[in-house]
Structures are given as C-alpha cells and as structure tokens.
Amino acid sequence: MIPSSDTEALNELVSKYTQLKKEIGKVIIGQDRVVDSLLLSIFTGGHCLLVGVPGLAKTLMVNTLAKTLGLQFSRIQFTPDLMPSDITGTEILDENRRFKFVKGPIFANILLADEINRTPPKTQSALLEAMQEHSVTVAGNSYQLEAPFFVLATQNPIEQEGTYPLPEAQLDRFMLNIKLDYPSLEEEMEIVRTTTIDTMAQPEIVLSAEDITGYQRVIRKMPVPDNVVNYAVRLVSSTRPNTESNTLANKYLSWGAGPRASQYLIMGAKTHAAFAGKYSPDIEDVNSVATEVLRHRVVRNYFAEAEGISTDEVIAQLIVK
Image (tube, rainbow, N blue to C red; front, side, top):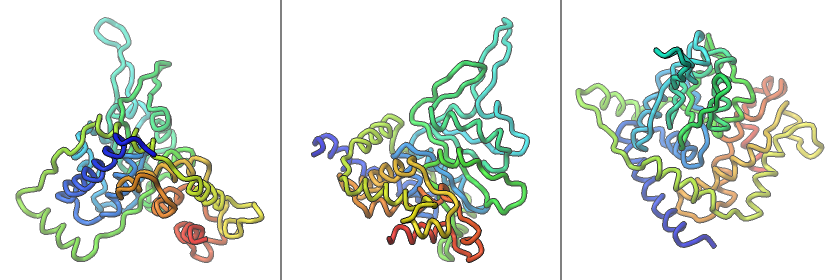
C-alpha cells in the first residue's frame, strides 16, 4: 500500500497532465504521442532525443513545454564550430584580475540541444557529465545544476549531410528516443490555418519546478510487482546477442541494451501508469515505453540491414515474445 498522501498526489497528477496537454495543444497541432513521451520523460526525470527532419516543430514543441511548466529554458544551436565552453561556460579575468566563472546556457532547467548531431563528438561530450551527474566541471571546479534539469535534444536523420553520429555513451544517457513523423493532411491544414494569422495562442503555466520535483518523488515511490520487474529485465536481456536463447537478437542484432535500459523501462512504466490514474505499473505500461527506451540502445547487424528490417521491427517482435 502507498500512503494516502501519495495517492492524492497521483490523482492530482492525472488532472495536471490533462491540463498540460490542453495548454500545449494551443500551440502544437497533433503530435499527441510525441507530447505524451516528452511529458513522460520530464516526470520520470530523464532526458529525451527527438529525431526528425527539419520543419516538424521540434524546437517549438520544447519551447512550449518549458512555458507550460514554468521552467527556465535555454537553447543551444549546435554547429560544427561550437566549442565545449560555449555550452558549459568559461572562466574570464575580471577587473580585479581574478578568474571569474561565467555560466553557459547549460545552467537552465530545460536545455534544448538543437540539432545536436551537427557538432563533432568532442563538443557533444560536454553534455555527458551534466546529463548524468547534474553538475558541470570547469577548470577543476564543480558547479551544481538546479533541479529539475532536462536535456531535450533534437537530431536530424543521420543520412543528412553534415551530421555526426552521437557516441554510444551519450546515446545511452537519453531515456527516450522519439521519432517525429509528418502530420496528417487534416493536421497540416490546421497548422497552416493557425500559423498564418496575426495572433498566436499563448500557453499558460500549469506547474512550477517545485511541483515537478514533488511529483517525481511520488512516482519513484510507486511499488512495482516482481513479475513486472522480471518482465522488463527479461525484455532487455532478449536484445543481447551471442546467447543461446536469444535467437532473434543473434540473427539481427550486433549490440544489445544494458542495465540502464531496464531501469528506464521501470521508471517509464511507473510514469505511464501514473498518467493513466494507476497506483502501480503493469506489463502493458512496460510495453508502452519499450520501443522508445530501446531503439537507440540496440544496433542492427548487416543481416537486418540486408533484409530491410528496422530496429523498431526487431523490438516489436521481442515484445510480442
């Protein structure tokens, strides 16, 4: 049993979640699944990678999300000449000839790393410590980032010119990998109608930073049945090739997901359950977040590429099993 105060908080979260969706919907037309996943990562305390071609409102979506949550928002446009100090900040000599640290844009609640794969890996790695430890080290001094802290990164498809693949260590720091698709005909017509007029709708603030950290604590306290933990761990282990029992992974994958994927599956399932008004996650909740948690943690081999089998298709077959 969870305390009555926690059940009240979870009930309240369902109402706030609905309100957030309504406010975001004032600006973002369609993309309900993407908005759901973004909110799930926020309340889980994870980072998010949004993958899609330019022009799908990735930047606008993150900006709108920050406004509705009342969080400090910062945006970095990643370019080939961006330096690590442009992200973290740097030390300068002040008028008294003493070194003074000038904070970079990473010191915010929500950091939008726009087109993160357009900068070389050296600069991409400047985010690693911040994403894992919520701190930044410059010239031997460590600086804590204010909670809550999220990196929401947008990425162009790697087939596009002028892109650099993200290192596996950095990919693993992202809880979710969210793919954005083109809008439907009706949605695109509505987008054109609402964005080609003189006035634009403005979302209202629904939650504060303190509210979010409070809900995160309640979600972490949700109990998880042993069979759900067992299912999540077995699902992740089924992505690892070179084992006798994992026939599908042996055939189509050259690399599988690590233990961090199991942790994120359970945390994501908890938040998914909380949004649905449940006090404990089940296997259905794990399956709902599995594809976005796993798709950037497994690597196809040449057999899968030759047969035209995508990572998502492999994961779908593993979930069914």
